[in-house]
Image: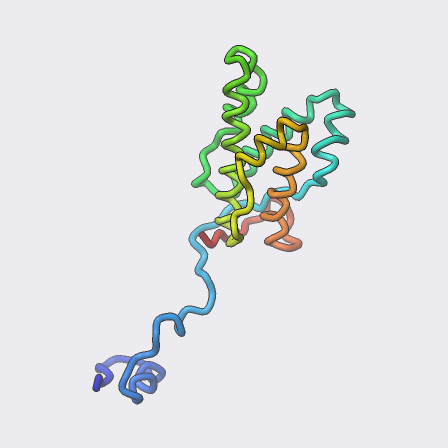
Amino acid sequence: MSYPQQGQGQAQQQAYQGGYAPAPAQQQAAPAAVGAGHNMKRRNPAGAWLGLPIITFGIYGLVWFFKVHDELYQYDRRIDNAATNALLSMLFGGITLGIWPLVMWVKLGGRIAQAQRAAGLQPSCSGGMGFLLGILGFGVLYYQIQLNKVADRYGDTPAGQQVSLVA
């Protein structure tokens, strides 16, 4: 039988009266925050996928690609800052016969999955699925839906507001 040690609080002494300490799982109620970042902007997936790129003759696609990478970095600093690299890979991708933009496109899926984990969500974003849907022209739609899951996790918290990360 274990006895309370001197200096322990009343609650701890009462817990030991039964002869054992409470289990650690009983003491932990919710996942603890491991850091903080800035909430991402929730975008209309159809607007990001089709509407704005048509209106801007494709320029918005480059803007979207840059902003998404930058927001992922602002959200979780553990995600590398690849915004400039991503934009340059899209602009000068023809030099590498289109290989580097495809690599950046697939890596974006992994970054989004990492952000989903940081939000405490089950990661559902896949770079492979993004690649396949990107070939068919639905990649931005898929990725924006996945990004909105992270933004929706924080409810009505505005974009740029500090939020806690749990994983």
